Length: 339
Ligand code: UDP
Image (cartoon, rainbow, N blue to C red):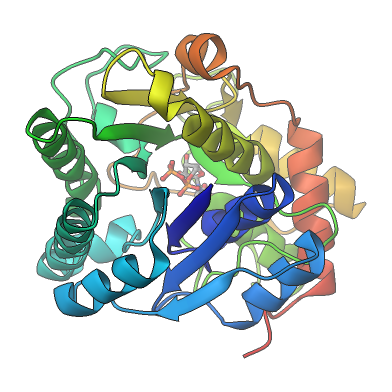
């Protein structure tokens, strides 16, 4: 297939592009590099043995988006592009609603105009909100989210359901990611957050490489086995393979729009992840326990039955793989990708 990947220069996008190229698909990346570096596409080419085509485009520009979809003439679209920082979304909600929704509207309009009927969308476990029973199952409703970022994911899922109901033949997979971590095992691609990392794994990696002084553990008085929060960490290469599987199953999905949890199906605590990182680095890393971070849930993970049964996908890589691959990437690229 020929696949348009929006946000294909980002963290999950770039790993997915490698997986798609390796699987024999042709790829066009659409990215505006607002949160990614062009150099990543050289690394993609190096690993996959051939290049993805590139369109530099801001998808909120409906006219440009239409031209890109027309020129790419894709069989399917994988839509990663969007803003994704939870904290920033509370400070700049309008930016988040505008960017994440407008870009999707442009894309859907262009897909309709040019007869593109397959879409894989980057959603998030955050759509389960604060009240869903754990483990999370795809059938849970009503969806809710605690941040403007999360609400853009809920809203986009709803928009996609409505558009699919009105568009015969449109097939949409909603992939709800849990906590993506890790890096390509070559050490050539990984997560390269701009500014201070919000997420646990890149923060620990930057402490290990000396870019940050110490990890702040946000609370150790939760009602969990070691008092720190449990999350479902999933290796970015497993996630990438999940996108390939979803694309290849779109035409045979049980319903035209279908959500799939992409997680490992188990909870790992902040302390367990941190200890695993210290073990791979070979020394204790500086850290301190501080107050809880507002909005954090104590524990959640995925029920992964549906992805296993319907996509034949399962996360295979372990926590040790996740930390070892992250550390290899961070050591080889202490400042991330070259500017
Ligand atoms: N966390 C932490 N220190 C940090 C970043 C995160 O203790 O500097 C904790 C956070 O409280 C949560 C877990 O690590 O329990 C995962 O946080 P992350 O932001 O990576 O993912 P999220 O909680 O948003 O799924």
